[in-house]
Length: 209
Image 1 (spheres, one colour):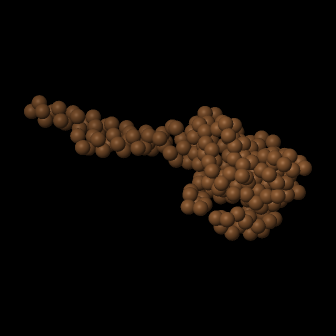
Image 2: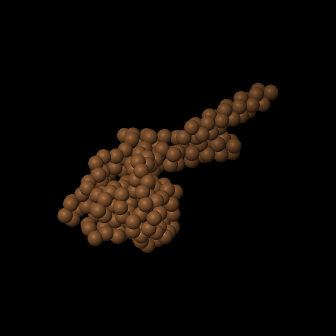
Image 3: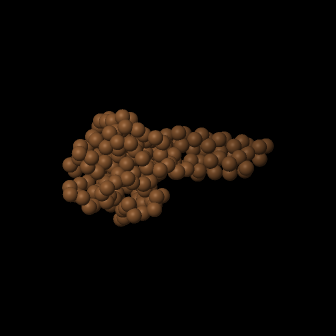
């Protein structure tokens, strides 16, 4: 009975499949910083270090969480995540999060927005980037201020070109919790059920004897 409970507990703990293989960043180009990335809590990323520009995508449904990690901008920026019914703003405290269950696959529907500036630009993930704006990947599997994030993304809000700047104008950490068990989780569950079946048959045999 103890073995049975142990196997069931292990299977239940594994069920959520909370891993990040389903969340990917598709790089469209890599460019060099023309300014120093200088938000507190991040490693030194000097002029000349590379940034991947691209799109954040998911292969199936799950809960996506965005965490505000800071900004260094002369404009007023935000992150809009329609599925959550809320947004992140520069006025939020660092560490503020918004999250939502996303059922579609492909590019995640969110955008960085330049709220008050001459160009009033935005950069939509997987969509249109306004004049001189872009979405860059600051890092992956990155720890910032003692918290870990699958991806850290930064917004370039008009540095004269979409490929110029430091991508620290609005920075968020992204995590993803899948709702579908991973293949290895299925394997573990099947193995556990097999052992349980074998144990049940053995106990029945011993009782009959």
